[in-house]
Image (cartoon, rainbow, N blue to C red; front, side, top):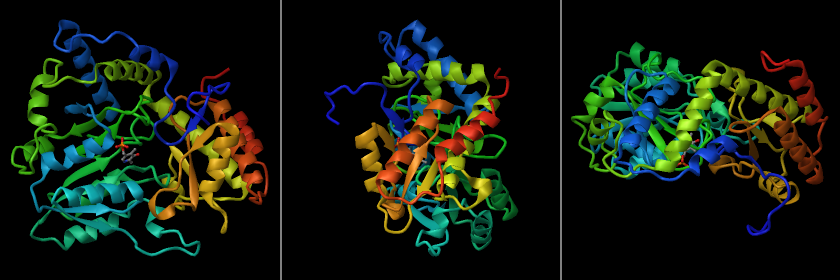
Length: 407
Ligand SMILES: *Cc1c(COP(=O)(O)O)cnc(C)c1O
């Protein structure tokens, strides 16, 4: 589709980020830009920083960067670590692998854990499961000199649709009596999947705007712990723009050391109001219900879900594995061309093997049923042999599981 040809109806942006942005947020972003050193701005800044603490479930500071999630990944590492530090990472998928590459490029010494084998469908085993916390415990027990300075894991692996049990990773670190910091990427988990920065003992949580917070891309976050702030005072990786110290100092009055993304912050203000008005428990329950409906459809089609661990199925997105011989990207392109519906591509090691359906952001049951209808038509047109109608299965699921409190 050419960009200058306006199609009728709305484009279905069902990729797992950027997620569809609610009109209420788009309208807030369109308001006039104000003086970022003026009196109104400080009040907005303080309100946002307090609201974010509720979303991350933390009493401690949250840093906002005018950057994509990748910037906040870098910020988490350079603020807490020194050149050459050993870092333990875990390969749950493409995003975990990218964070590992970023750590290498920064001059750290990251090690990537995970099962390197493939299952009988040829898919990498560790890309279908969450972090196996016992492997982390074993590895930390084998580090009596405490050379490993940080453990880095991805909470919701957006390339696969698999979540990891962060509390179990914390327990593994504690069971090994190891002082390593726990750094977690919840770029796509926050505000869609259950996430508790303080309760789970996370030292730095990295997140972004364009997933569960329903904002356009462009801002990202580091939620901190007192231990992370202490580590930042001794960390020797070069940093200036990413350094927490000056930001934390100015944030005390609601300002930043540089020009913040004023209009995206208007959007964040609206997003926080929407999420907090609704209440996190109902926001999380809504994503669980959406995910169940979508998975009911995939099962009715007779197709495999990328995640093989039932307890780790993502409430944010579902990875749909294609039968042998079907190129997932060809199916995805056909669906885009015919039905103006965007689905997530298979990334890295699963390229061409699967596509991803996002169920986050400005969605509801009917938009998801329409999304599934686009998928079902596209799968049939691509010659995929379906065992039944996923659309009917999702309709049955949603009809039988109304939103709590709905009439
Ligand atoms: C989206 C995403 C990223 C990358 O964020 P950008 O904003 O594209 O830089 C990293 N990790 C996860 C888990 C993500 O979902």
